[in-house]
Length: 119
Image (tube, rainbow, N blue to C red; front, side, top):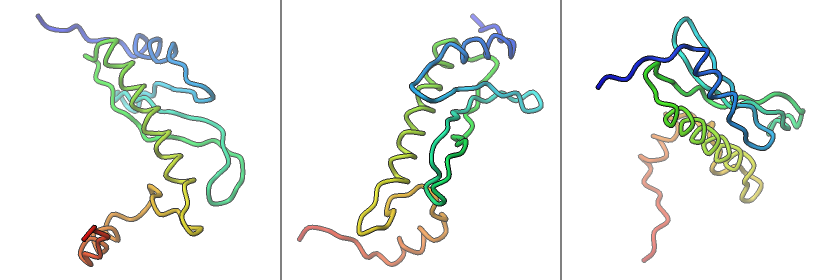
């Protein structure tokens, strides 16, 4: 049995019914490709200025079920909350787990093999 595709309006209506605290979850149509995205107002971790923050975009298939769309929204919220925790968590005044490190710099750190292992 094949799943019928949804219209963008149907996807938008499902996403509109998702609520989480101060966050908005919005459906986005980028040239026929659909996404959902978490948005909220918060202080910028670098400048301290209160401004609109955006999570990453999450792809939504036209063939996604209602449950898949809602579960994707839930994953977007969880990922956003983890992102916030990584940005604001500090050790010795540094954001040691922040999510914006350059992946190539992380590779260099891996190559140093300076691990903190139990003996």
